Image (cartoon, rainbow, N blue to C red; front, top):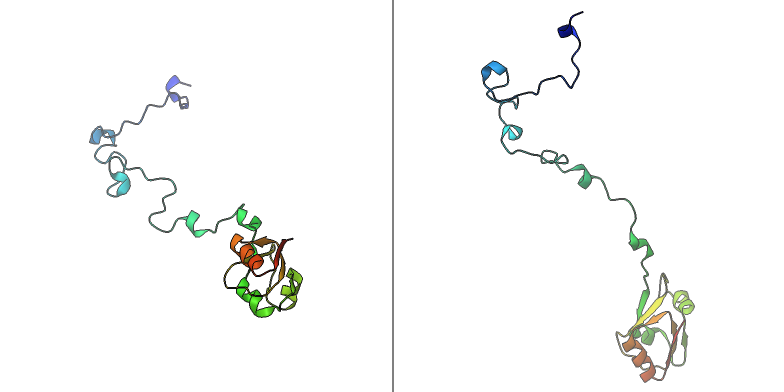
Length: 147
């Protein structure tokens, strides 16, 4: 066995010297092929670039944690609705609203908003009130009670 016939390890391999003339076998295009984006100088394409087609991270729907599932949503009701459906001296509770079909889903609770006028004296029990709704209910002689 001769020294030159031993298998070469990576430490002994010579570095590939490209663009050093036709005799090297790596002249002219310097192992870059003929034309195209990758043959140009300074060409670097990001690893996630997919040739102009819609990338996979935009084709696949989003997954994972989302705070929206913990959002507190209230079923809203206006004073104009209370004026229409209730008589003077009635007590308005979430159960009554659901029973009469005024509110379909109670969600996290009921919030009374100040849209419309209230002339009847009502006792309104709800989870939330807008400040304007409270003043209008009290001005009509009623009570706004937070549950």
